[in-house]
Image (cartoon, rainbow, N blue to C red; front, side, top):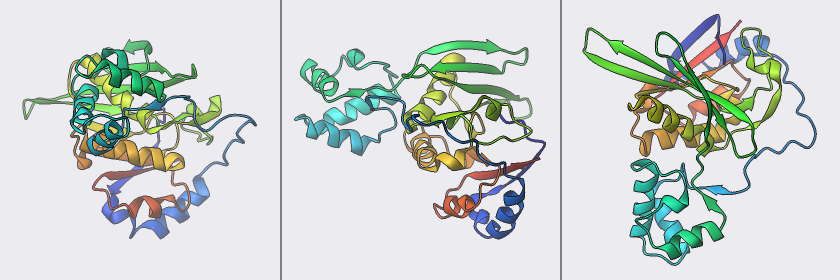
Amino acid sequence: MAAPQHVRAAPLARALRATATATATATASVPVPVPVPAGIKSQGTSRRALLGLSEPQLRQLAIDLGQQSYRGKQLHDLLYKSRAKQIQEFNHVPKAFREALLGAGWSVGRSPVHHAVTASDGTTKILLKLEDNRLIETVGIPVDDDNKGSSRLTACVSSQVGCPLRCSFCATGKGGFARNLQPHEIVEQVLAIEETFKHRVTNVVFMGMGEPMMNLKSVLEAHQCFNKELKIGQRMMTISTVGVPNTIKMLASHKLQSTLAVSNT
């Protein structure tokens, strides 16, 4: 996980106006990517994941498999409310539908917790073991606001297995790069933190393993799922980058209401 020495943060709405300056600064500081070993696949799972899909997408899936549209709403509730981890746990839908999902190559898309460790301040690091046996880390950071009498739980999520960059302030890149994470593999990190803390995640920072801008498609899909399905406000999310050239403008074009944090040495 990155531990940047300097971080500059700004709303993404202003990022487009600052692109020229940010990119010029980032170009000088971004490390050269580590070559990806031949034969490593960009995707690490053999089955399609339900996690990360929206209610309209799940309704369409139900129709495609010969079910009524409302069965898709049931799937949505099972994924995001009941938090079912396997299709076999979908007790509220017909057995024939469960078998059709399995037969079509679908899975929930949840990974088991491989290890977890909690610091004295309550911060908890969780290692998830993915379908291809690779490990990723996600961190839950609880903060009590004594002045307001409320508490926040921030999820620091990874976007890649390893990292292709060799930033001097981050240890992740030293272990090499394996692959990008798929959207559901980012989303499940927040669910794992909520289950560990028995508390709703209020904030998300894309600041774990990997460079989010080098897996922008999955990051944006996960961002949308956090906002639409898990009801985490866009303003409660931050995307961190070392400033990969040409990507800040791409991100700003999506007009998110989240924060962009630029880290450099």
